[in-house]
Length: 230
Image (tube, rainbow, N blue to C red; front, side, top):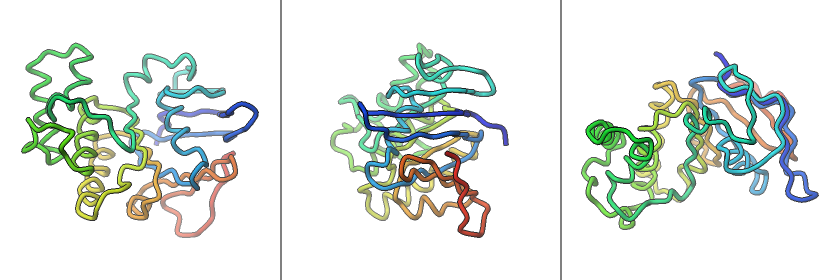
């Protein structure tokens, strides 16, 4: 697989405190990863850095084999990277309007927005909620709407922060079923999580933040060995 993004050195500090110091981070195109670590290890911070929402020291940045930076955040990555918060923000409009928001912001014609939104709602199993007020929906429904809203933008890198946290069994299963479909469509997905079902999905690479370093386990490895990539 080719690398979608590669960073040779990534550091994050909060004042004098060093959150993490990663010697190399590489994410393959069309591959899913789980990012684990104890609370406070920096999982959400790392996702936010990759999404351009948090500053950091970064060197040797390549995106689709093109040299770039994370600060200022490049337009190519802004169009290609989507971040979904653990508690997705929903506008007080309708489910359809929420899913189509990014497309409208990009100036896409109304007819095309309608078509893509319809397809995304069917994909996420929320078509019956089209005109519903998002504030009245369950956590699982909001999470599937957030994934549909991300999918219509055709991201090359999708960053999910605890996508199944606080969901019940049925809602978790519905969200879990959507992740492999996104990867099959060519999207690279990084999921910060503690969910063993997400961690155990077939073919998923494992990244772990531990003591400010990043460990990587090959998804195809049968053994417990972990390569330290920091």
